Image (cartoon, rainbow over all chains, first blue to last red; front, side, top):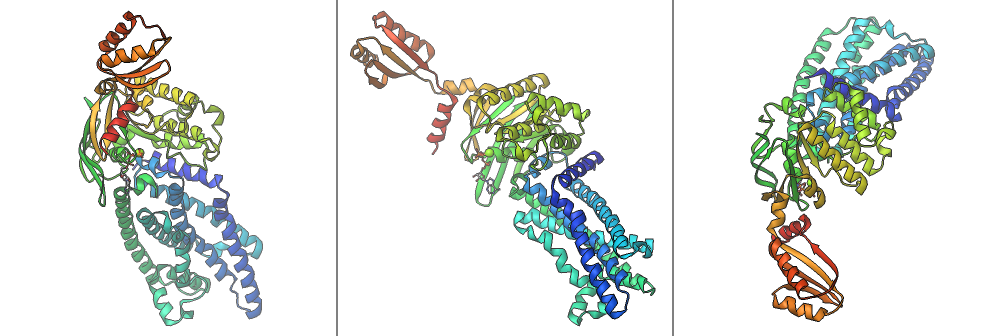
Length: 261
Length: 306
Ligand SMILES: Nc1ncnc2c1ncn2[C@@H]1O[C@H](COP(=O)(O)OP(=O)(O)OP(=O)(O)O)[C@@H](O)[C@H]1O
Ligand SMILES: [Mg+2]
């Protein structure tokens, strides 16, 4: 593991980000759309029901961004290397898969934080919602657990790309949205029908959003749920890393690494 | 001392045997050429040596190290370039080269990039995106990347495809100069025979996954000894034709005053037959002696095995 190589790759992703307008859309535009839509929707609901949903929904939108961005960043930047047929040059150099992934994670984390700050300011300006009304320690735990889950998804999708090539690229954009209904982002676990609640209960991200609602309603935190999320994610992280390594070896065997398709 | 040692290398894709028990050694400082028809297994062999492709079996040594064990040592000292994989489209030449310079831990990054771009006449395009370059310019960008870490072993897989004759000639000169200055070892593939002939010290012919011959360009050319001679005489063409037939020459064409015939022999036999023609008093208005080229040999070997 050499830092100069990781930094070089981060520089690469920085160049790609500033060169491609759609990558900047990812940082600012889509998260902003989410925030605005949900913001006005919840303002409307609040007025109707006289229940203050604003912080619950906006907090959820802002935190959701971390899971969404983390999973997509990893697979999209790996796909980028496929599209530009760059694997040939990258992997004939001393770069290791682990360095490749760490560069993407660090760069992605930086991007997520930029988005976070942007959304926090915007939410305050538009709806006078102060994200720091959520205690900092919980924000850090939530961001960590959600990003980690996003990276796990990213690792698995990257593994699938190394195995099956670009034809499965649609997964890169869609998987996280399949997970969303079962993460209880905008509604409590109790609102789900039993079959969906069963799935939601094993999904680690559920506990982050459940606890967000707890904390905003001044209810005690469910530490058991957060602990469960952490343990499950660590296990999945190990499995996903192992799967990626296997897929990478398979790509070396099939010739995908050399040809890119 | 060998820079590359390959023993019994093998690679299959399902039922296709892409590389079949290939062995060869490349000396330090040598330019070693790979020739072969499409699908012969050249690229597959190179990709296994550079670690992009997992071999089925066999041994590879680069600079006396097993690249699987000492991959960091080896990979920092080699580089690859091909016209078929340009650098990132969305980035400029300078950005691309900067990234690879940093990956290889090059000192004085900006200076190195400038000097490479200058050598390959790309300086004026430094800040243009690779997507907006001509294919020749893209190819040269990939070559700059290939030299960015001053490699001790350089793999050039069809690295001159799409270059115009002038730039291609300059590129060969840069490669040759770099080789002479640095003493690096080069494994070179190309479908342009003159290029291989001009650059390479030794040449390996590959066919259907096997190396069928390794020799120097000169030796290979000696392997087929047919020179064709084209003579145009001012008069007495019929008489010359009869004379050549008497001398048991293989006449390929006799038309008007021009006769083309083959001499299957060494050099001094050519001299002898020409001498005889002169002493017989034939007046020549034109004379061509065509030596065999690698092209001829290549076609001959390729057809011979089909
Ligand atoms: N990823 C792959 N999957 C299946 N077969 C492959 C793969 N890559 C190469 N082959 C086959 O292996 C054989 C050798 O291919 P290779 O690319 O090494 O040839 P080459 O000598 O470089 O040819 P060219 O002159 O066209 O570049 C060919 O029959 C090719 O079809
Ligand atoms: Mg090839």
